Image (tube, rainbow, N blue to C red):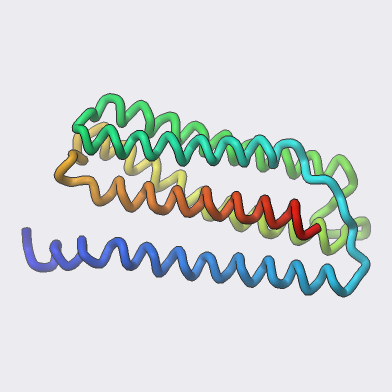
Length: 188
């Protein structure tokens, strides 16, 4: 392995952590703006869609399944690891669908993103959940590429950095959604 490849591997995790810290700052800013705007008044309180509760369960289950995929690779059980990666991907897609259904529910109840009938409270929910979903799309693409590499036997107990990076990012997305969901529930 060349010096460049060694350095690249050493830098991978710190770079991921830096990028996740910057993403966290974006969401911290948005949730802070939510609190400040709410204090100004003219705020519509509403119940969050059941789909958001379902999506929370789905993303937590996906975090568990990617943990099992990593565990199986550590034991060189690649076939079982592939199974758990597929489950993780399907749960991630189900999360995205659930979010979309949640937006549909909000819209049906007259909570709009923009326009004459909109309110800042609904707009914040749409923006924050959409931004999370954009990051989740990146996570799904990462899951897909990592899953393909796993099925091609590119990972093993001795070489699993790509899978570890994918799992760290996926757990981050899970934690971020749980934070946002609890924030929405308790700060309204």
